[in-house]
Image (cartoon, rainbow, N blue to C red):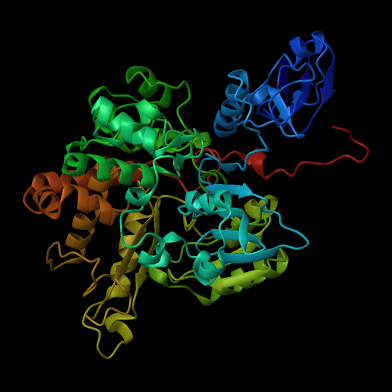
Length: 584
């Protein structure tokens, strides 16, 4: 392919090839992966089939020539992972050394993809079929799907989405081929559900044999990790990653690597640096990146990567959204948002569902509504054949099953502000019925909630923000009174003070919080004393924070109604036409 040719709107219409020919196209799919280069092998007369064909000893059709790794095709499979390559190399080395005692019968592989905003894992025969049993867990609200495939009381496949923490454990069970009959009733709930029965109450890493594989992606066993720790004096997870490659790929074995490190160095493990690197693309922490953006007036993602000497040209999928958020939250009105660096929900301004449709949640000020708004919602449900309507835990109404091409029409007909239920932003302000109606209410929490939401909506943040206002200690709005997560900040007398202190805290969180860090974790890592010092003990600083937030929100527009200024890409809502008779 030479280049893509677009129309006046920037939408692809033609693909031009190196030989001068071209083809009309409405959609271009980039298929990336491993394709063995067999040109040399074919010229040498070796049989090839999607790779150089080899037998169980890694010999080609010419027994004097061996092939391993991504260029080899064993029993119809060309592996594109490191771990199978190591297994093949061991067999090949045995035969080259004339031991001749090993055979390669294939590898069981797992995949944990790195996709922005998506967390999938698969291993083994996760499709199942005749003679197989399936255990399913599906939580659409939490965004979790788990499927375990069992045959003859053994786990033979797993497919996880949204919660992949136990992927490494399932993969270990699959590779070991052990019977799961004794743990079947708890298998779906992960290794932690076994309690001490899984490892006799001891550290799991401590009970593993040295030859047990810890990192399946890179074929690193426990013994290699322990030897590297002792030989090179390693004390941190990053040190182990750099030296052994364990936990350096998909990351699913990170917990086990950390356990191995802790059990080997003991109390010295605390010598690890407190400033953890933001990601594998840099050695700098979130705080150091944010400080550089502030001090050097960096306004774009390319400027940040260039100034901080990023190791990868485009950054990684996990932290590209962070590099987009940090400049625009530090330099509002100057830094320009890059929509393509946001998660899919924030690009489409709606929550994508498992079937490819979307959910729409309009904003309802302080969790209040009117008969007119309810009628509009009902009419829209009928007009667009929306299959499901649900009242959310945030005291709002969720329209589920909206087609992507219908989103602009639904937003227009609703004529209600975006609820930002899809974004790392202020989601909702819950309220109780307050002193206006409640016999026990002591304050007008509904009015306070409406004022808070109108003052703070359109506010993007490191993570989603939800606020609740209760007018009575019974906590009908679940605002945090008398709960374990609520921390007392201060007492105030007026609505204006509530707005200023709340806004100042949220702006402090916006300016200093790490991306994907919730407010409770931000407070944990800076300390409540620090928050009080910045908000309560520094009146001018508190006022300045509140004013900076108001300044930032001044340029934020409603993406449901101000497409152009909010930089909403209209092209994404145009359905792709599939022409009959078209060939790929």
